[in-house]
Length: 470
Image (cartoon, rainbow, N blue to C red; front, side, top):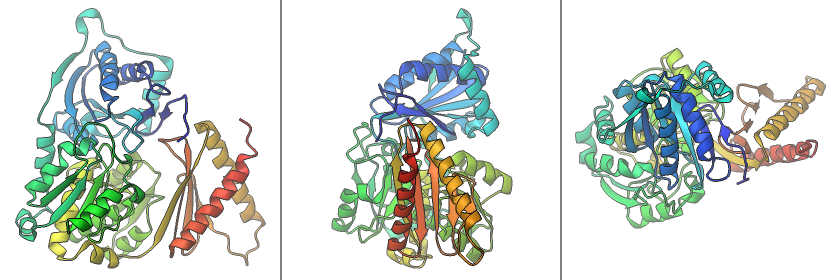
């Protein structure tokens, strides 16, 4: 991954490489801004298992104390647990210390507003204004903030999942499923093994020590899960699960040891949930067209948004959706909380398996079949990434203008980056909000077609890069 000296500011917060683009000054400045933003009131703070999290935590606390905040520290927890506790405790905001799926040398802070709600665009703009202008509301000596510790966060989260209307504990326990769980030594280690045991599953644990030493990449892509795949087969397990660093995502490995992309998590859960309750689906522009078919089969609408959980959540509120998420393996369960929850996804998929009495392979075979390809182009900076997307858009718009009506040019959708859509395939070019890269996602009827479309697009971007001076 390219080293960048500037932290990456996205819709959820900031991330950077520790000691390079993320240091105590940046963190404390943002914490000061956030403490000012919430008016010096109650803020929930929690962190994932990264070894740099204690440093980040102290810098965050300094900024919050200086603005008079009452801080409730829930300790080492998954991101969805932290946001759920902000809702449960009625806090005015929360800060989660995590870099989610980024490599181990990264860390960051993610912000949420009152009761764990993700920040709206207006709120993000105001927070950024406070940070950039240093318009901090510093508390006097006798009104400094204070710290409280809360130790029951994971127990509360487990209770909410186990009380879900779509969960039948007796049915799951009767199924006696054997599950291999790989938490990547991330934050999921403190809750997901306990959930599976409460569900009555036989659990084989891999990398479930929350020490921050990631024995595999934090992002649970199929090529990072060889140990999990091998263990599922050797243990004769019914399914394998893997989390990212903060457990807001979940991916699945079939009983045959085949790793599935995160697209399948949302597809399987959406189909299962819509069998229980009717309502629309919300997903991002780069999520699989499997969801179009699932929505049609259930007679509901599919709404697409920009990439980012915050955008999905806003649209879910707007249309009162039954389910939503991203193709990364992040699924949002509105009855629990409006954020992606990889722990709840474990319960949903285990329930789906027990209820259907099918293998994971059979469930997959019964779903619409498409192939996706995901690649990325490393870029020196976010500014150059922005220029590159702009250059590409101008070129594609020119192509459409010059193409005759008899020739087949794809539609251009500009919800997020550039999405070129044909009748049976699509490709999306988008600047990442969490890494200095351009992401290129494509989907087509076959893997060969999807990869060819992805590679052709990357070649175009590399050609356009030569026109940018940096």
